Length: 397
Image 1 (tube, rainbow, N blue to C red):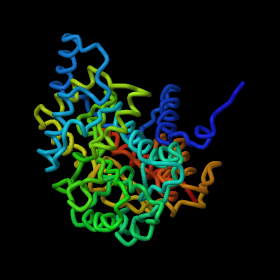
Image 2 (image 1 turned 45 degrees about the vertical axis):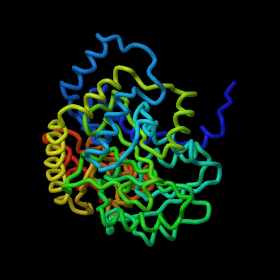
Image 3 (image 1 turned 30 degrees about the horizontal axis):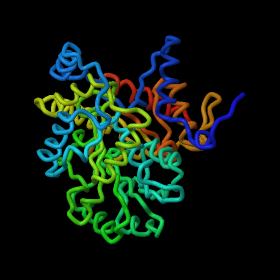
């Protein structure tokens, strides 16, 4: 007997994970695939963080952790938010979860009722829409194009808000585009939101430290909406700790309590060992973060320069994260060797089959006509991937 719930039937599988799996399957068959589909730093976790985890094992941190996280970690997160962002949070406002993904989902499930509207600027990370579906909310997608650097305007935001709007979900630096909102741009959006006291802002800041603008700005800095902003962040990207699965929510106390209640029923506290490692990440030396950021910036410059040499691709210059999001409509309608390119998804599959380079269809990010490439890989891989992509695209007629 199969009886799948309607909520699960309504969800789409993760396109990024699906493409990564296809890439791994080809690799297992002996195919030399360059995987540019995965949103994961290729660096190892810094040694001082690993050492803290080893000490936690030897120190017998092997029991259930508190649902919202160890107090010492939550204090370290509060200190980070004060030191780096100028924001005041108490430990009671911090909920540590199994990755930033759970923190986002906790917040949406805790705040959204069936029929509530969530404004999502697009292109947007693949899981936002699915999380809102899970909460039975309604997604209001606001598209931002290549021409506007994939950032929505205050006018677009104002036009999207209705009496049913409950949340605005903002990601800066952005996955999948790498766009970064400036302080002035965020202030303009905050001014729109300030006029609507029932709207909560969910700010996904997981790429905070992978930023090439010289500064990071949080929308939580503005007094007019500060008590209505929930921040999600974590250790995955900045500290190369994707597998450790530690993220956090910093939120108004009422929302933090609600997320604590929810998490207490379906996962309880995050890994005790991983929490002690995360504490060392936040409280320890930050040189490693800057070293990785510089490497990503160098790779950004390399991949952008190489892709700009390929005819037909429209390339923006991402200011953060480790993605580039080229517009590929020039290749729609072309074909080669049994492949007909009717969509950007067809192009992504063609590049996998013909060039053995894994990318992700922009439609997965609510932006058909684009593909996403991650440059969280070596300079040599970037050069070879660009060479293969150029050769494969040149065959399309």
